[in-house]
Length: 420
Image (spheres, helix red, strand yellow):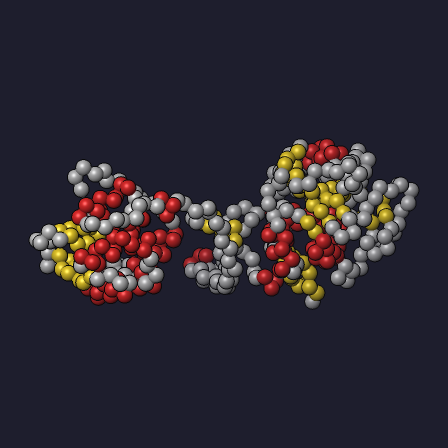
């Protein structure tokens, strides 16, 4: 209207609006969604009136409210009118300029409508109430109805369906694969309005109990502090013994991960994580001060790549122990083989009820460990990144380690079925 400022507002693109459009434009033409509109409350009615409604006066000077229905099909307009009548509004369908339909309210229906929606009408639009035309007091505006609520995160179980690989034609016929474009090392697809977690076969294929992993996941949160580049949840406590396990990476293409733990009979507590694209010597040099901070923690490592040679200057190292006999050798670090990996994953699985960790990277990578078969035996296989998982699992395996004299050497060996 003349003298009033008009503001046009547009939302950002959002998938939810696409769903709404499909409800109101199922075949490309505007329809009334019975599913949504049947749940219309007074606040929704106020918004509808502010958009398409007005209060006018007839030849007799008596005011009445009406809501324009534009290009809606006639059957939808009559359905809307019946809905309003069922809500105790006295109204009927009228035709505007012999072309478009509208819903017109009687005088009593108008007063009833405006009294119901008045508290939702903001000051800038209260002119639409035409309050001077009635000897009726309307409720004042309640701004709380337009105050945004706290954001809430929703979770749901996904339904996983196998999608067949399409047949390629022409010179590509020999290829039988599809590309999976996702966020590096997380298997998450970033979407507008949410994150889709993808590439897991099913919960039934997970190596670890689904309920235990979900329990750990619910207790994950960001680190409480940072020290020497490490994410810290529990800082060192005087008198406690700690173990750091380093899972080495290549540096430029894969992360090296170190996790720090402390153990009691009933509780295996993960205290800190340090990680980065660091090769052997650089990773060792960065881990030393963190280990010293944790009361000269024992450093254990996977005996891979070249990191072992760079750890020898540290005085408190893990020496390879035979889990079957308990004998300690003179080799530094844990040796991963097909047999020891089965033992590692089984030991980690048995320990889940005692583990306390708040690092989501460890928990999420537990879901990457899947059941596979090799020579008729069930074995754990990785279907994604596993550096954080391996550092945690091997820390659990090596938790009984202590510093020993070099003079005592044990004999050990791995049999084909060991560790199951």
